[in-house]
Amino acid sequence: MILHIDCNTFYASCEVALHPDLQGKPVVVANCNEAGGGIILALTKEAKALGLKRGDPVFKVTKLLNDNNVTVFPANLPKYVDISRRLMRIVREQNIVVNFQQYSVDEFFGELPTDDKDQLREAALKIKHHIEQSTDIPVSCGVSLTYTLGKVATWYAKHYPGYEGVCVLPKDKIEVALNNFPIAEVWGIGRRTAPKLKANGIDNALQFYNTDERHIRRWLNINGVCTWKELHGIPSISIDNPERQQSICHSRTFAYMTSDLNTLRTYISDYAVAVARKLRAQHSVCLTVSAFLSTNPFREDLDQYSNMATTKLNVATADSRDICKAAISALEEIYKPGLQYKKAGVILSNITSDENIQFDLFQDPEQTSKSSKLMAALDSLTDKYGMDSVKLAAQGFEKPNLNLSNFQSSQNQSTNINDIIKAK
Image 1: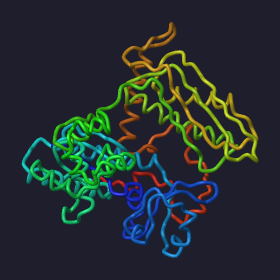
Image 2: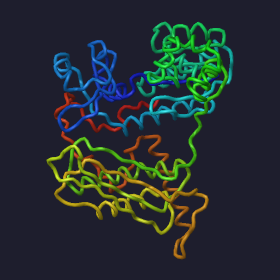
Image 3: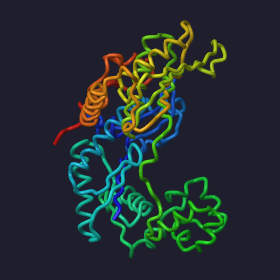
């Protein structure tokens, strides 16, 4: 049976876990911008009770936030990724779930090797409680025959308190569950496809389930058919890791513009380390490292500029040190003082398998072996203790000062993940 784990209001839950004094209080996570606004990305149930919604522009609800003492945090994706990795390790250590893998930063799938409903519920509850006790991140779990039905079960676990966060959906209960399930909530349908189905008289998942496969194929092509089969308990979707990427990019739009070269070096170093980790994750090496910079195209009152430079390595590598050095070199080549930069990134290309490294005449193979061992140790430490637990000197010891005074929170925004993870 398929197990689906979904973290509840993940970004907001991470911030509450970081700051236990905010338990039971309204908390919002938003992406920040230079005007002091942003869009609400996640919020706790206490914030939802005030009428706040995901997608609300912060400037439109400022009075509501202030009147109700809502704490607003700027989104910090690297921190949330750290917690997500910790969660994965915690589940794997239990040795209950088979083929456990991450689908997104807050969603996970695995398999439970039993068909007994009581055993399935007991196992899912054990996993859920262990996650929550170890990380303080609330999760909901769904168990059923396929990935799509697993997400249906999780929806019920989230929306109906009687399930206590865990819903097991066996074959004989599928039609009952789908009868009350909105068609727009079906994984693979979504809000764009739902109107097309509603125009054909399909308002809920059970009506979709009972529709002839030929009609589904005509309306939604093969992807719709796969969803239809999944709802019938026939596994038809794969979430295996994608094939090796031929180029890998890591970029960010800054919260605040900057013209400072040292700040840009720190950003580029962070991006280089992140992209090198992605490279190692797919067991690859690269020969080419590029860095790019651009100003804010929406600020027509400022000088506009964008450029990219590329550094070719002598030997293909996945070593964060080499990639970071090459990225900084490329950055310094294109940097122009006095401009206000808004975005930067690092791109790796000429990617090959790490099993087929072509050495040059002066390269010591033993040095490459030492590099691989060092990077493996680095990845192991950051998986266990957090992304910032071990850093290159080029990344700096403190993040650049982003003026977040427009945000209400007085909490320390740069708290390390180690401060919230409880090793139990």
